[in-house]
Structure formats: C-alpha cells, structure tokens
Image (cartoon, rainbow, N blue to C red):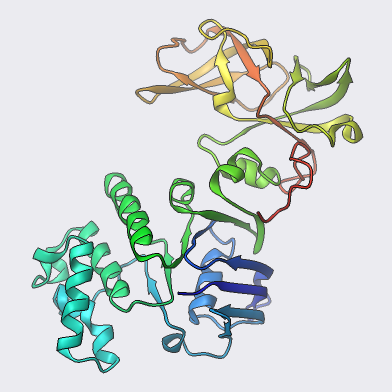
Length: 381
C-alpha cells in the first residue's frame, strides 16, 4: 500500500484555463481521503492527474515515494472506479472482474481465487455468470468495485461512483465502501460533490473551490471549524446562515448587531481574534441547528432570544426546517428543530440564537477567513 504526495500541482489547459492552481496535499497510507467541492472546482481533474489520465502542467505526484509524473497509467499500480461503471456489456460478471488480470498475463488458476474472494466480499457470488444488463445499478457498481479489488493495487481512485444510484442505494453503497476500505486497509481517494458522502466516508476531507484547496481536515473538524466562509457555507445541510452586521465589545464579551435588527450576544469559545476585528462589515455565521423555537426550548445562557416571522415550514418527519424572516436581514434564516415544535407560516415566534458554535467572518466575500478558530489552527489538519 502507499501514501500519495501531491506537490505544487498545476493543470493548465490550452485555452488558458487553469483548473488546478498549485495545490499541495498529502494522502496518508491506508487513508480514505475525499475530495469534495462544487462542479468545476478541480477535484476530478486532480484525481485524473493522480491516475495519469490527465497530463500534469506543473508540480509533482508521488505514489508510495515514487514520482509518477511520467509513468503510464497502467504502470502506476492504482485502480480507478468510474461514475458510469465502464463495464463490458458482452462479458459476464466473472469476465469483467477477471479481464484486467488476464491482461497482466495471469492464468485462470491464479485468477479464480482472486475473483472468488472479491465476489464473496461484495455479495456477487451468485451473479458471476450474468451479463451487466441483468444486474441492478447497485450490483453493477459492485462489479466495478470488484474489478478494482481483484488487482490489489496500491491505491483506489473513485470518480463520483454513486451519483447514478437512487438515494436508498447510495446509502447502502456508502456503508459497503467504508466496510471495504476497513477490510482492505488500503489508500482510497474519492471524488464527490455530495457533502453527505464526504462527511460519512472520509477519514479526512479536502474541500476545493476554483482550483484551490480551501481546507483539509477530518469531517467533524471541517464542520465545527470551517477555515473560511466558503467552507462554512458549503459543508452542512441546510447551509450555514450568514447575517451581515457589526461586531462590538461588551462588558466581559462581544455582541453582534444584525444590520437594522436585533443584537445577539456572542458566546463561542475561540474569540481571541475578535478584539482586532471590531466594527461594521462583519458576518455572523450560525448553523440551523443552533436556532430553536423559544416557545418550546428554554433560552440558555449562551443564547439570545429574538422575534422572527415564519415564512415556510418544511416537515422532514423527525425534524423540520423553518424559514424565518428577521428584521434587517434580506434572505430567510433557516432553523432546524423538532417536528413537534409546531409553528405555521405567517406566525411570529421567539427564536433562540445560541452562539456557542457560531462564527464571525470579515465581510470580504466567499473566502473571508473565519475569526473564531482555535489558536494556531491550520488550513490543513
């Protein structure tokens, strides 16, 4: 098995477009690393350069300590699983899984036990004689995985492999992929635009935008301590609420005055950068689960109670999303709470703003630095 070291990696196309802008990333041996970001952020291009399917314009890629910039894809000892499965329709499941081993010159006696082991691992034992057209989408994806597994490569690369599956199958396949990685104890690099996949699969996740890495850290760290406003808004469903206003000092603490509206006390733990950022042009970021209906949830010492008008209620079963209109704020603010905390469109309700896990940003656009990070916090963890 092997680690993957990416150094100052650049991809510049002939038309002058730079898809990847000198990124640095170390993927540890046996790690499940997820590259996540919106379309066009450079994540798939990065994966394809690791695989050797895209030429490198600058920088270096090393797999297991060996620089592979000039190494052909077939000689990099990696296996790639694609979004569209890429199965041979005229071959059986067995033949699809065995094909790469045949190309390596292995005999049937050598191939059979490898295919048998992979098919047992992926619950394909009874499907080996079938053609891909006779399989479900989930089974086809498992065949594509099996074809990679039998090769026993140094690393597996996944290019949005679950995007063609329905929601139920995606959930099942996430479990199977994580289980597979734990069994094989191999390096996996996984590209997705789906943050749920990123949060549930990755040992660490790499958030990318505009060809650059915005943050690398374990999922809970990215969620709790987003490095900048882009990460804060991209990770989380529904996304973090952002409210413009002014930051001020109070006796023993800080407060945030929402532009044209109420003032909220700030109670987050990491506030060492706030004294140097007082004034207008600031952004308060607070997640929907940190708002609650004060008619049902007592107002904690770390919360401020303000009035808001209900615009829309989305009932999700065990929880609900309530879209609120707050004085002085143009966009709706989303509150996530229990579906038993009843409220209706048009109603004005008291809302707790609990700022224990809130964040403050200077209003400098999407990539404004988070001012409420732990001391010494690094972009890559």
